[in-house]
Each structure stands twice: as C-alpha cells, then as structure tokens.
Length: 115
Image (cartoon, rainbow, N blue to C red; front, side, top):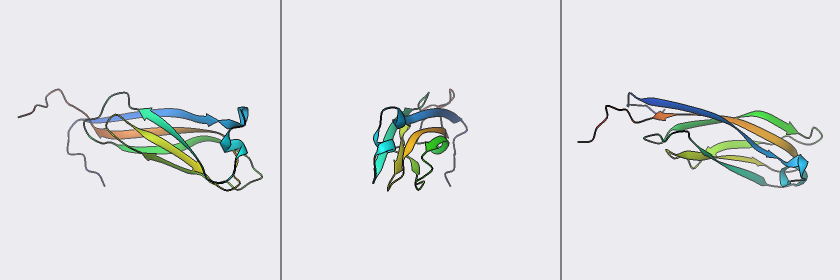
C-alpha cells in the first residue's frame, strides 16, 4: 500500500483510443505472435511525487474466432505522466482498443514551503 502523507492529493483521469488497426490492416489486426502498442500519457498537471496509476479496458473490438489474449498495464510512471502498454500474442486479432486511466498522488499545496 502506498500511504499518502501529504494533505494535498490530486486525482486525474482520461480516456485513450490506443489503436484502430482494422481500418488500415495494422499489426494488431493482421499479425500473429507477440505484439505490443505503447501510448504516452501526460497528466493535466504535474504531481509533486510519483502517483499511483490504474489502467483498464473500456472498449475492445476483437475477432471472435481466435483466442482472446490481452495484457494491459501502466509503465514508466513519473510525476508528469506514464506509458500505457497494451500487448497480445499468438493468433489473437484485435481491431481496436480504448482504455480509461485514473491517477492519484500528492500535489503541491499553496501553503507548502521549503526550509
């Protein structure tokens, strides 16, 4: 558990359409084997420390005749942003994916000061 000891906590959220590969025959739709897509996300304001980030699928359009394999996670988390990593493998064919994310962390407070 990450304990926030700061009295000023910020919450940010967003939605990202990661890809729509069926429209142009992209790798997630036509490929096989290990495939990965990475999307950089910037927070609306900088946190004063590294926040916690949650990423979840909110829409996926996937070929029903194949196995459904998905790995989604947040990486490279900094006070300024993070990277959404979406991966699949094998014979899975994914047409498009949208994710929503939520971040919670410490933010600067107008009464903070350095000694």
